[in-house]
Length: 376
Image (cartoon, helix red, strand yellow):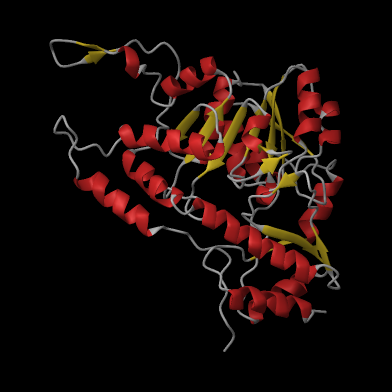
């Protein structure tokens, strides 16, 4: 019987269980038990900032919520346009629809799956309010060139870094490369809170606005407690129920104890794949430049005869996946675009192979051996 190698596997540190138990059983000095948004959410935000250098962290209940909040902070509303890739999870572009705005799909680079900076400018109109880029698999987009176009037209850049918690660009964490950076803590990401996300915001003003708007527009710092037991506050802006809770934050704090090992192990597996699969007939590896470092959530490559490759891998007990299909294949985003030639080519040949922290050296060696054996 063939070895079974799964595509994804959540990493949950033993420390996470300890932190959750403490959260569920420990009363604070005032005698209260905090399981909603409490002190651990703030501690998690501060820990993320300390470890990754994220400025002004807003811990939220999902990465999708983080993108929606970023769009709201940019003033994106009905009829506005956001330039974005089609080749991504629908969680990237559903928030645009949620703001009653229009996703304008730009092409990607075949060698990375990331937004092509050369295909942005001609799509900008008077209705364009933002540019959204996705760091596919955790490999940074060309932020210098994207920011050059954005600055020219005075447009904010929102980074969908769902895959990119440890990604580096020219010596700095990629979060520092634009006004807004989102990271996902969904179950199978490098760092998980069960489900959750964070929005990192450069502007202090927008950060404080985001803190209010993630919880119904309520300014918790300026509540006025009334004699009738009601803490009065004026809600002067549209807000959402997007905040993280202390249970999720405690999982995140526990898993942060392992994050260096998590990222290093994934880096080693990806390097092993690159070393052994370079030059294998039918395989084209993605770009890897020395001035940027992937967070290695996925290992995506291009293969000839992808149906045959998938059948071979499945027959040998190895899960593989395209992970996400281009969003304009879904009716909600309108008709299939005809002006995305790299996206067309990409969707025919891209495939991701297993990359997670439960893989053993024997698992990785088996995956490599099967690919080296060929499939045509």
